[in-house]
Length: 141
Image (tube, rainbow, N blue to C red; front, side):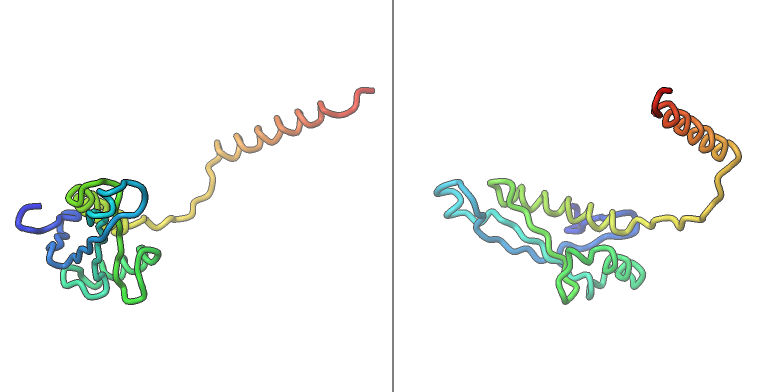
């Protein structure tokens, strides 16, 4: 991350100053280390008011990231898998980049098509085969 920027994809770079990090004690077993070290990292990103996003990108992110957003359009991600605050922060930045990149992928519009002749013939052949199998299951006279 040179120059304190995170490259999500070509054309979209988010300055790290737009990301808020919160640190707290991690839960679970671990004894004295867990009880004394703030290794849990929470990343907050304001999708609604980010100056790095165009209106088109903002609308797409708000639509696709709805489960991860709170009521004010803030994205929340949490990591506490490692004993190291630094590693949790690095993992969270990578996950943040992937979440945004996946959300910004445009799904192509599906244009309905009709099945071709070979596909129709395969379907009818499969139906005939299945019908024959079921006919053989009948009672023997």
